[in-house]
Image (cartoon, rainbow, N blue to C red):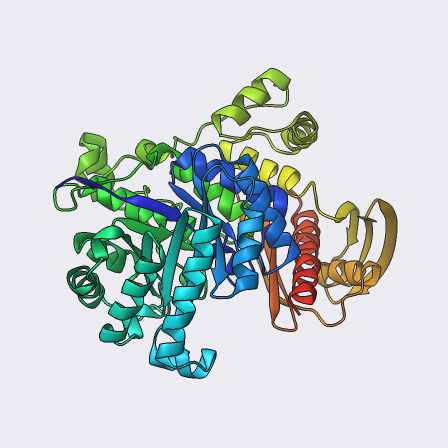
Length: 510
Ligand code: KIV
Ligand code: ZN
């Protein structure tokens, strides 16, 4: 047995449903390109009917994709499925992913449908999708809390109507490896036409078991896994693609399966997703955390110096983590800077490059040593924020032990310069009040303000995360700069831009 496992990436759909996460079109295109470089087989680009922005994103990713199958999610309704098909028109290899809940709780409370009505909806929705595209995936939402007899009938119905992939999501992260593996074994055995479809996993991480459950299902016969970069997703997230891919590689002796994942692209994908979503990766996160290859204890360091396999089961290079290197200085020119960007995996347009180079020169003036991490933070901050409708132009802050802090802020609001000067109980308070005065958003409140240093040293760049909450929506922004207050202003404005996008989405959905 050495079966190939298809990787279905849902970073752009389920991942984007993470609290506070949202990506604009340019960001989604950048992530999609990196997902192809990472080697995923299927990219779920969005939920086409959810908003105009989602529709455009699915369409743009479908147009740009080179090799991957592009999927759009759709509920079991004509409008959803037709909208998905329309967005997928430019795709070389389109897939409609339609779903309906099959657990007694969801059918009764959420859908208000009887089991027979749900079977009829499956028949109709999959048949319609199959008339519009060749490749149809059907998901049994809340499969792990469904009655197995009913679930088997539902799967049989979906396959008979033309679904070639059957996904059994652990929607609420309730399964354990034993129960999830047993569910796949049971369904593969008892559904009469199971051999005409590929079975897929989709695990949420509410009990921290998403990856373990995924691997158990693979052992039981699943041949597609659904996952996200950094494990982002609804609530506690989805199974992390980097963990699944590396588990299959490192423990090939007991998990004899292969994927097309190019493991050296993992770190790049992780950093990009973290930058565009503002969701920082926890330092002790497996594979991609800052500490994943760090050794603190003397005994471990001694072992590592003698032979790295004493304390490392894979090399940092194998997941694309290079050594931290001193890179460029203030005398470095454009060619060296372009070279460095390429080696870090950035491909920038000419204008983006010029903006990044200008920021690099300022940084090299302010900071003696510029490391890879500095360049990554700078490019993430400068380039990925370039399309924001509101941008920070200038920031001046006066603070100290005498009197109230004062901030003077100038923003570019859709190309128009606007300024405000305000006082506050501290510099950050004054700064954020000034931004609120220029772009009023009285219903929003600051849910999180977090500062961390990109590298060591008092001249390090500060990376600031801000989360704004408004009417049940949350938006996360990030900003980086050697001046913590400038980074704070950038992060706040970045979150505000995302909140405005989310408001637009909710209005459309309503
Ligand atoms: O978790 C879930 O059930 C889902 C489905 C829509 C596939 O994301
Ligand atoms: Zn999900």
